[in-house]
Length: 142
Image (cartoon, rainbow, N blue to C red; front, side, top):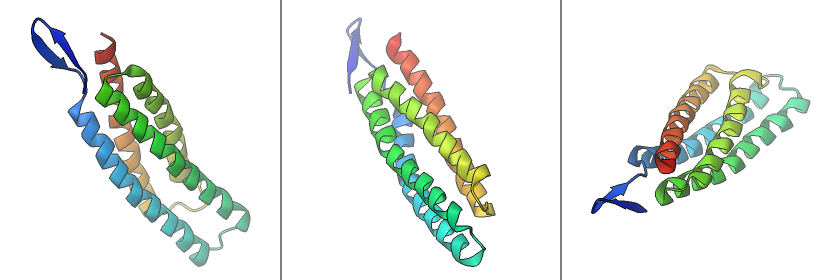
């Protein structure tokens, strides 16, 4: 962590709450990915899931997983090093993740109640994380 010296005291600007949220979000996303993948397989077996829609739903899920890794990495790196560029990049990647989560909440072929719960929780953590990122970036810039 970088510290700013002002008047003989060290001032740490990185956010502990944001760092903890990165960790929790990383663990939750593993659960989210596995649960969503399981539900897609379940829906393809139980419902008349059109074959033309199965591949795009799986593709979106895997793109979302690939996007999650740099999103968490840059966010954590930016917060710990107190640099606004990686944190800003993480914020931009979060917007992409939000769009994909909304896809699973609203636009996928079949939306189960479990999908709604999983995505609502994911979107809530994204919202909280984004607000903390903006506050951290503002603290780093000032």
